Length: 375
Image (cartoon, rainbow, N blue to C red; front, side, top):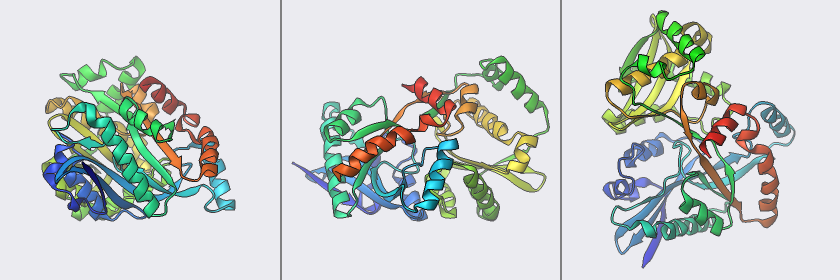
């Protein structure tokens, strides 16, 4: 017999049992504990667990927050929704209960290693049920599964059976690393991109420093973070300083912060997660005034590719933004899907209309191309 629990802290779930449900994941129990301890504003954490007797068989992270329906809109569409928000504050914002995480790219509900694959869909359906009951208890009408892999038919079938609607979400960019050198990587790119990158590599670059403690530079890191956040249309959450320091503390050798210096000035940083299989780019922030002069984004990109080559890491997971650049840089894309449903039938019908306007591929041609490539 399956029993279900929804917890407010991941510490209520045994660390080894949680990690057994997500083998080889970098975003593991320690990562979610660091996120929880960071105290990200306006996010409350939920952890869904299914047991057979006392044995954990399936888990999923979840969260609640105030959600802007235009979160993934850019360009002209964003300017229109910003104007609507000024005239009618709160018009586009609803309380949301979502399975997944605001600081993980995909919703990967996990099942224990001893659970047969054929049982997974039934367990996903149980997780959806407990999420909806938990949302009811919290008085939240809008429920979602955030960024389920589009290739995961079991998620799609489970959500469809539960009456959820679907729309494309931000695709994840990946760069496989079979190259023996940076020059070999550059040789796979288009002629103009290859020529541009080689020219930039010949110019003097910033000093690069890999760190696992950053307390002494946190004011500069937060200055760069806030400036980068202010330029982004797509950022869902606002990360506090404790997020960056907590990730480095809890993940140890599996996390690093790469600092970029011009003389004695910190001009960019890149928070990454790493193991022997992958490098995950979690956040890159930079000084816009110096980016063009010193090619900070491309320098960071090539530093990460070079690190993967040197350490024989097969995959660079490089985020959900900057699709135009990543198409040029040889990335492939995996699709993600947002499933959602409102318990109020009238609001649920209205959301069917709104999703036609707020689909992320409506406002960014490069993102549309990435979504098309991943489908």
